[in-house]
Length: 466
Image 1 (tube, rainbow, N blue to C red):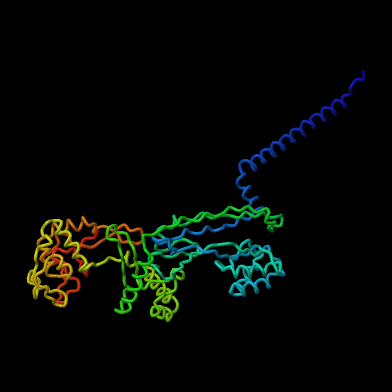
Image 2 (spheres, rainbow, N blue to C red):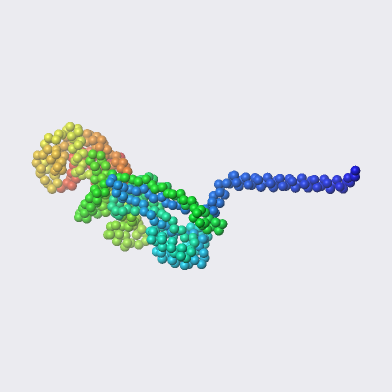
């Protein structure tokens, strides 16, 4: 057996140490690599999965149509109509196509060519809005131009828009939506969450260059339409109300707009409700009053912007809901009901209407100084007799009248399911009521009432807000 020399032993030890060191470094590198892979694939999975999906997929939203609004008979008052939105992916369009496409698309979409060219020239952009809500004819023309010229990167996306078949019919009731199909006023706002549907999606696969792959790779998630809303309003009664209300506003030159409400006597259901003049829900930002529109158009700059906003807010305001109402002689029905229920009058009681009736030194007449003579309760109501109802109010007394006023719910809001109803009312309380509060102190009283009538004064003073 050959004896190992010291040099050989030294070389052998060196090789062993070299192998151990190499193995250690390999183990460290492998452990680091495994740790890094674990960190990327487990800890950072969501982040890189989203980046990968963004590179491999295009997620396009398919807007859901809003639910319909129908009258009591099922007549559609607000529906969703199909339309298309034109968008562009400038980075996918060939450089030599940009100028030609910009000119053609500007003409088809009725846009400024310079603006379209600027958007398409942003070569790194993945999205540029060209025009919202175009009709089918325009969408088909854009599609044909793209196919004929082999333009890439022009997206024709299906969309929906709100359409009101009757135009300015029941506008203050229905309200309108914005460009995102969200309710802005009226029932569209009040029931926005119910009417809004669930958007769908189209997932399109992209290749390594970022271009769309054939539609065989698309995944389509269908949108779900929102819930429909059926009203108590009857379209026939609404038409009658709007026609006569518009005629009255014109005949009497009403400057602050006219209001009408038709209710079902037995249930209190709203059968028709209108404020005239109002607006066209299809074009809510167009001022319908020609005089006001001319005044706004005559202004410029900030003054015009402020005047336009005020005019729009005014025509959108549902005066039947948002304005406090000073009832006048219609409140005699409340007085009569309270007096009958309290037992202080009967249908056979007699009242006298002469030249005038004095209260605390003030003499009150009936409208146009009519003298109705003796009459029972039914005749007093039929004639809207001021003097008779002053006598009825005196029998009832202010404390009882205040109790009935509250019992009728006249201190509180009605709770109607329309936006912007004021929570406050204005009225007299018994401790603040004098012998003639609520009585109009003019010879030809427009809104005469009984002594204890709690109507708010025109000045708004002396009442309590609830």
